[in-house]
Image (spheres, rainbow, N blue to C red):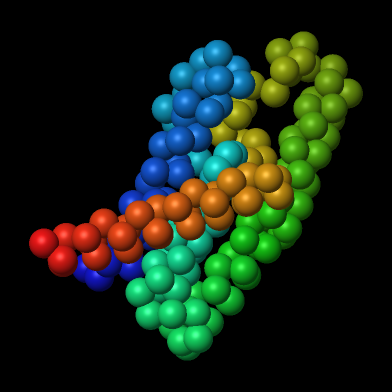
Length: 156
């Protein structure tokens, strides 16, 4: 496996893991399921593509086609994460609320709270802009660390 791929995948895993303590600070509860969910702070999508683009910039330079491809790919992924996917998540929230309202209107007393969670649409699909920026900063840091750590090893 090449260094760029290892760096990007490790950064994605790190971003997913960091969601757990960050959410714990907000809510006071540990939720290990967040490791496998989309959305939240930091954006693992942004972190992964930023780590790859940063590593390529430092290893090959910003004037290469490799960096241009990684940067363009990264911008598209980050725009999608906070744009289209976020809107889909907000739509899912509204549809879930609508399903609860319909059950209440039907007069079913067992359905005052929508218990059938597996039938609810996933609402945590996208990211707030700050989550995308947080992921991008994490990715730039891990991409730079990967470059400098491997460079240092070669000189010894």
